[in-house]
Image (cartoon, rainbow, N blue to C red; front, top):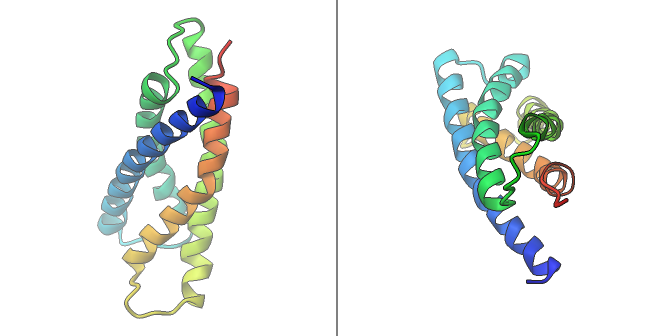
Length: 147
């Protein structure tokens, strides 16, 4: 298999894992925001951070064993640390875009059908979309790169 085909296959698997992790993230985020009633600003950002941690934990194991098929058991603690470093960068991008969307973009797009709870999800999805490229390239070339 060519490197190009392998990269495309990895990206497709990465994207499918991303869909699953986005579902986990949104499920946890919606439970948090429905329970607390806090849907903007710093409280929302904190809740988004917690929901991200659920998704990223799932992401590590699936990306390691399926998307990038990283079999080396050598220095697993280091690999997880590198994964978390890339993921924290992605989380900062994700959370910032999500929080800015629900706090500042929402008032500019004032459609009555888009409730605060709908915006919780719009913000989360925008954040996920922006962080996607960062995470893929970070995992592929930094965390799970072939030796």
